[in-house]
Image 1 (cartoon, rainbow, N blue to C red):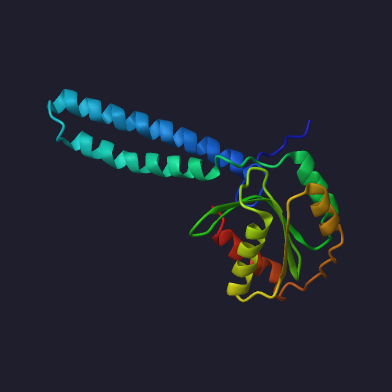
Image 2: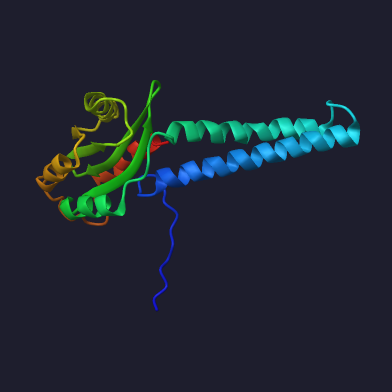
Length: 197
């Protein structure tokens, strides 16, 4: 029997959103419980609210607040299914890069993309199911981000899986590159990951 290696989903891969939500809940519960325990122990041991354990309890609330914030940011989204991921991979042209479970941030909003396919000259995105912003707003955000960073890529954002599959099926394949040749996809993906939550 062959042993299947488990990998932890990172930014841009299927399962990332669900993993972050579970992790945020665990951190919030654990840090709150520890803070409460330290505070109560401080009251019992020192018979005062002003003690070293109360200070540690207050400091432990910082990761609690961070975990709650992260959960709130991701709560309306869920990870894409393996079936949808397989459909997208089958339709993606050779030499391009596929990203999944993207939650990107702007000063005003969190923006959800189920998938993004990056070729040498285009970024095609599929709006996430829980996303309340319109496809037009997602398109404008992505287009402006790409333009602001100086990349000359076409941008397309769709909200229907079948239309997305049809669109990426029609994208041209990216040529193979020599080892020392610059990969335009890699530069764009590195830039996108900076804006991923």
